[in-house]
Amino acid sequence: MIGIDEALDTVLAEVEPLGSERVPLLEALGRACAADVVSPEAVPGFTNSAMDGFAVRGEDLAGGRREFAVVAEIPAGRPNARHLFAGESAKIMTGAPLPPGADTVVPVELTVALEGGVLLTEAPAPGSNVRLAGEDLAPGDVLLERGDRVGPAEIGLLASVGVEALAVARRPRVAVLATGSELVPPGQPLAPGQIRNSNSFTAYAQVLGAGGDPVLLGIAPDDVAETRRLLAAALEQDVVLTSGGVSVGEFDFVKQVQEELGVERRFWGVKTKPGKPLAFGVRGGTLVFGVPGNPVAAMVSFELYIRPALLALQGRRDLYRPYVVARAAEPVRAAKGRTELRRCRLTREGGAWSFTTTGPQGSGILRSMALADGLAIVPTRHPAGPAGEELPVQLLEGSTTQRPPYPA
Image 1 (cartoon, rainbow, N blue to C red):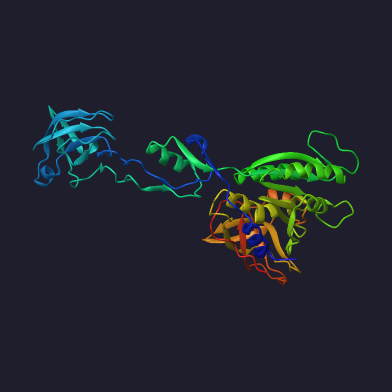
Image 2 (cartoon, helix red, strand yellow; image 1 turned 90 degrees about the vertical axis):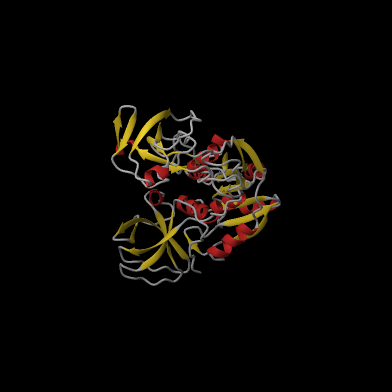
């Protein structure tokens, strides 16, 4: 068996970023930018008022003038070509273009209306309350780099310079296949000895969360021929994700069928708990993952290896979950021959993080994941310790370029 870092490096070494497609701006949310995007224009495009008030000449204020004639009114969206001369002002609204000759805006709350004019109760510094043309963006400024995730702020930024469509990485298509004759989909009654197929549903959600396009292929029963048929269909996608059938039981023949279909094995077995019987291979450009059938082991395996691979396929650089160092709020149980990833909840007090596990940590207890904020990383052969011991905790939200520390 190999460690987490070696397994993750092996997976990422097989990733070749997918191609791109052009989509309308509003369809780019959550996608990865496929090429650098530069601004085609300046923002703001013209010098304008930062607030409602009166546009004046700064040199008048510097000279001590406090009473001005109001010679124009300028609402937003309607430029006024009237040049301001000494002693003149223009009533102006937020976002309206500054008139020629003016370089300062006096907020309306610092003024008193006069007949045909305005009196300043306080004078701002010359140049105040004005947004200069191009102070936010200049033509040619890089707005997004290749691999950046497009979020709501990026959508607004691109719209502000007139971008209507964007080149984004193609979503990786991920075949999701559960294995085992004991599995039953939701909505059907359970016969004695049967269990619900939750793995396909968690995998579907995890794939969506990583920007992929899940393709549900159902359940492969404990039958070699049917498993071969479904796996052959799965191998037409960019990524294959099977759950179950990768251990050493009599009916665990997913690895065998993969090999018959030309999948080249890269590794089988990782020194982790949960997630030991993980298989990874490739066929052509298709990445093939076989995760354990236990629900928690399947989800943790996705977090550690499949999610980074899906992001890398999209050209993303932020492949990893963030992590924090947290103190155990309970005694730490010893770890034996594998790195353990214990589901935990995080709290923050006085600037320091602490964690507690989410109850029983069996790899079939899906509730332990549903309650978790993160995964406490306990090194191999770590001795039992008292409360207060510090450990890295990998979060289950967010993305970063820094890989969490996975001790061997």
